[in-house]
Length: 355
Ligand SMILES: *Cc1c(COP(=O)(O)O)cnc(C)c1O
Image (tube, rainbow, N blue to C red):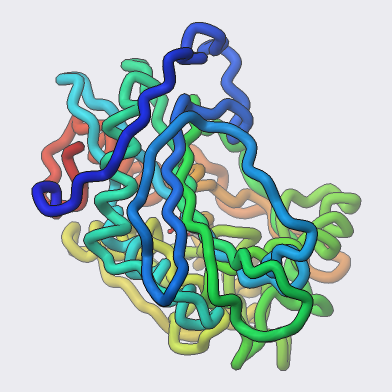
């Protein structure tokens, strides 16, 4: 692919890198010098072009804004102590982007092309990844419908854009979640499995209600019965129950197929830890926290990798989960994945792509 596709690069003459305050890097607010834009028209993807990061113009009838054909991805690139730049499992994001596109009636981008667009942009802006502990480059590929037309039908034109943000080590305060029994993130037959923009807009209102009660995130349950646990905020959820790593199965189309979760499952299996992907009931988790059989609980996602969950709200109760310092598995996993991404341990899984 690298030989066959030559992405055009218009290097900016004015880098903004010297304006960055590396000590205070708010997540998602600082943008690297370049972005990649690729248009879909006449039934095919046009040549991708990398040029200066900046605002884009919108026609007021741009269909994505009105009818929501809009999807995204999120992944990270890291620089290791040898100065090598590596992207974590971009092929998985490419595959998921295809699934999201299909569900939203959008054109698909071949896996190789998606990966090369991401790789090339990271190569161009690689000096935006500082050689500092915990720093990385957050990569945001997204696609939206651009037909200038008021009417509900799949758009015939689209824009695919990739930009990147340098980010510092993502500190998450121990997370408090609330089991949600009224609102839903996703329903069977809906679009929960797709990384579709509207899913996140729809989750803001219940999340704000939860925040007013002192929780960071909602723990989403199935829309029909609210008795099965699905995921937490925008992370997949995992539990250690009697020494078994348990996570809700992806059989229903309501759970986002997370790459971090998949990686945790694969590493755990390689360590000989039993794993189960199955239905997880609210009742077994509440009972298990009370009797101590649920010893660990964490969210898994690209931004934080592993976010320890320490409190769980259920109706009028708030339960404390095993203190973080006693969590042997998730502490070890968190350190292992960080080291693997940073190139401190050998990537025996072959997950990282060298830029
Ligand atoms: C992106 C996302 C995740 C985590 O996926 P990763 O590939 O691990 O980053 C989990 N749940 C939802 C709803 C998401 O949008």
